[in-house]
Length: 455
Image 1 (spheres, rainbow, N blue to C red):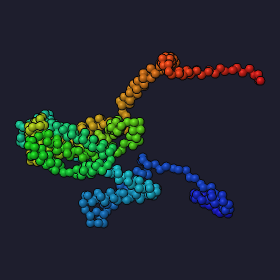
Image 2: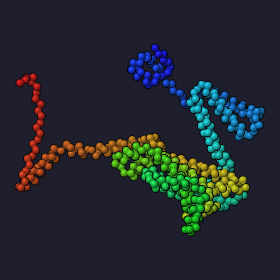
Image 3: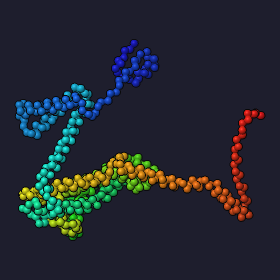
Image 4: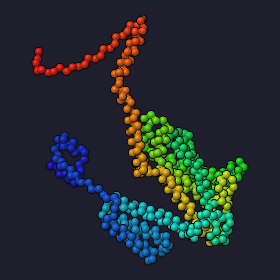
């Protein structure tokens, strides 16, 4: 008699061995109930492990930097404390959990740390810029006047950045007008029409992504101003900004269009829709939210450029609303001009201009998200009501289209009788042809009452 450990599962060949008559008696394997491991949430042991690891890491670093090792520096102290914290936390977690749980807990702490660092850096940049520019932002003339009648020694009650805000809006509008249709169309071409030329275009787009901004400005300056003889203007600056935005929009849009499920396009083409209708009615609405994000990425890249604007639009302290003639200034160029001055009022104007630029980018981002809507499969309340209303209209139109067919179907016998009469007259008018006998109607089946009698 063979003794089998019930705590281990049997191999697949064991039942075959028993069925073959080997004489070995095999016990049934014991099935342990599956107990899923909780992934998220805080537990008492987890909180205690975090607190203990933090205290242990801090004490270990203090001993290393103060007593045991000749170490110094705030950055080295922080890095050593964090690495000690991770090591102690992994050891404490390993006392209760398995290896996979330990890796999961440690990576969760690392990711939370990275997220906190990014948020802290963002808050620091935005907060420092707004705090340094608070003196200029509190004056209304800062948003309504230009710097034509104000100098470096004038107080903040004189002058403003109205000319820079208007110039930035005009330049970015020109760049978006050029970039959005070309970028999305190129991304659709790369996604829907694969081939050698599309691979070549994708390579060029990827190479243009790393194009320095000064090169884009020099290209437009050489072609538009030197070769064609045009003057520096906001239109030329819009061309230069569009050169910087175009590869970003194409790459981001291409990635978004690749995420559209192939089953949607296959279903559309299976119903007989041409390629352009599939792209217009299926692919683009599905990827609308991602395309809005792609446009925002390109806008954020182009709206902060300084060197192309300086080369192609020049510099001015007056308000110019005509993008085709005369120099024009943007907010990044105004920030550069204000901050390089040693006067405190000009520096405050520079930081105020930077705060306005960040607010402008935020407003454009919100507008793009509203236009783009939610992702595929997620509808807002307005979109849901619109879909229900469209469905009701389609149902009503479907009933109206099918109502006449029902009336014609009811009068089908009368129509057939008229057609038979007309065909009979045509046959009688032709003497050389033998008229074909009219088909006799099919006899109706009359049910026979069952009387219970047999022959």
